[in-house]
Length: 150
Image (cartoon, rainbow, N blue to C red; front, side, top):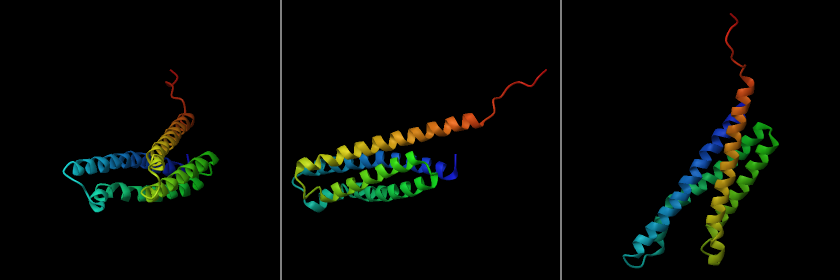
């Protein structure tokens, strides 16, 4: 395993965790708005306040996706590069869906959470594969232990 391979694997792991937190922030924003609307109508600023962490982390995750892609080039592994490229494309699409969500028909807003789940699935699968590959490489590289001759 190369240094870039290890960095890439750990970065993908952190990104996977960040996407889980991001989905949680979306839930917080939705339920915060629902809670405030039960007390009467809410204005746009109040609505957006609940989604502030979601928006901020989402932007950071897209930037992290670019860094993931750059790290993948260092691995010189075609599979990792293509998977990282796919993640980055999905993240850019997610950002665009988030930015234009209010202007698009509500039916297209359906794509934003679905794409989030696809991102989580792709990142999770990629991360799990990298950890398995690293474990397999470690086992091959480690000499078999046996008891010394008597």
